[in-house]
View 1 (tube, rainbow, N blue to C red):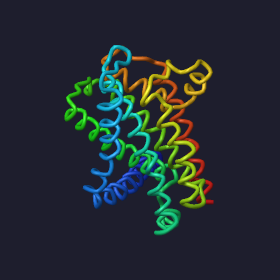
View 2: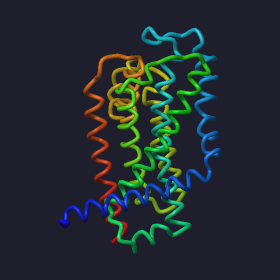
View 3: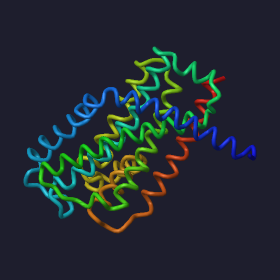
View 4: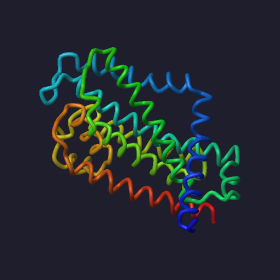
Length: 256
């Protein structure tokens, strides 16, 4: 067997081992995780969808139809980025990262495995929102490939960002600060609850920098069954690759 083939097999095995570990941990808390993920979107649907936006229309769609793709985008961001917390628990309390450093698993395999785990958590949040949308009587194009492409790219971006962040922070306090100053503002400003084009032009310029803005746009286009837009796909793909490379670099430096 060629050396390259052996390396590929070894990397895949290492990635699967990291991914499987995270999934086993997730599975051990399955019901708690599922119901905790359902709390926030349920509250948003009741408060904003049935309360504030009951008789509101956005772009020719009832506000609930506008809100649900936004909740999908926000949920995939929060859950995929949440893998950073799992990594930090493993680093600071269980010392699992030290065991990884002593193992034959490559840095690239570790990053791939953790990113896959973050993306898997994001998919659970999507399923929850889709189930809730059925309870609220909202029917969208959930089988549209563009809808799922937006979910894949969004979770890839924030799972990669999470691995990078987990390697850079020095404590859980730093992790919480990063979430409060980066993820939470993005959740409310990234086109989740209101259309970005209704904001002043200078605010729109700032919001176009946020990856969640493009993810919300792409996921919403897919949910509405609209033609595919290339710009958000390209933006998310480029940002995702950049964060993935930075995550790999951060893991390499943490090993050193």
